[in-house]
Amino acid sequence: GQGARLFLLGPEWGCAGACDCGCFRRCGQLRLTPIMDDGDGGSEPSSPRRFAPAWCGSRWSWPIRLIFLGGGQPPEMTSRQWRVVSAVMAAGFFSHFDDDLLPLCLRQLQRTLDIPEPQVCLLLSVVATGKGGAAFMSVLADVLGRRVVFFCSIVAFSLLSVISAFQRSVWGFVALQLIARVFLAGKDSMSNTYLVEETDPKCRGWVIGTCQSVAVTGGGCAVILFGAIGGLEDGWRYLYGLASLQLFFLAPVWRLLPERSRGGKEARGEELRRDALRRLSCWRRLTASLRSGLRPLRLLATAYPKRAVACLFVNANNGFALTPSVVLKVKHLQDVHGLSPAAVSAVVLGSGIAALVVFPLLGRISDKGGRRTLLCSFMTVCPVGVLLF
Image 1 (tube, rainbow, N blue to C red):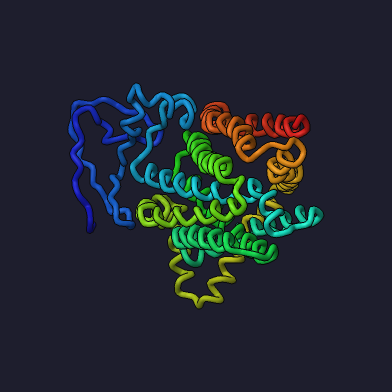
Image 2: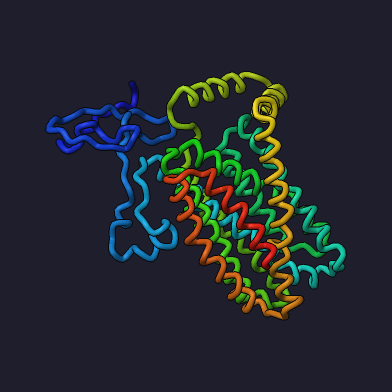
């Protein structure tokens, strides 16, 4: 077909690359493997070569491998998978920076915008409801395409964060942050979709854990900057204004992300379904996508009702227990314990460094030992930590 080329493999690659199980078989024959165009400007072999970044083998890279990679070597993945993971990591770094600004700057916001103490939790509750827009953004991705929704979400919440820095009224700030949370949740939903669809199950836990570790690094940068300029009168405005920096990284990230999923029966069926949707009018396309988006929830509720109720119960309790501690801990440290922004930064960074190491390590453990046992164990330990705090 058009775009096909020949890829000559050496004698040590008898099976023409990595098979599904990741093993290699040594053979003295040469193989010719056709390389087909993957539809988004790049080329991938039919049995794509799997590799780990060369810098990971350097002896000087052990601090990065210890913090971000769970203390070991990264898994071998194809070039397409590395591109997707790199793009999602970059986007997660900046989105976590934006998401952490509200709890960090809450006391400064309260003082600058004259927010009464009884309205602080109301403000946080209204802003947090925006994350419910992830479901709508996921449906919209079926209409417009996931890459378009992904990047439009990044542009939208970045601009809304910058505009929030110039607000003088509390409800103007709340309205902008509410809409920003809708797009932030949409970006997170698309990121999870990319990671689940593009990575292999045997390394998916490590990939998601490493992406979370990089995202926490973005929050760590926000904490460091808060310690430096959070004590200024309008320091929170400068921090929200820094959200514009991520707009300069959109072009390279756009080129890294593909629109279509990898090959396979499910991916081809998904592509055929999208082609059928494009032939419909915009309204019919939206209603069809909405029905398609609700169908998995309906099937989950009817086929596995007990499992669905258990998941909803656990997630509801998890949010109920953790949200107050996450959004109010910095304000608590400043109001009750009298810590300065620099002291708060030092306290929060201590726990953040631990999270950098734990996320990829737990992901690597889940790939080897199973996810259900690990999830249940830490969901049991987490409320205990909240109670101790």
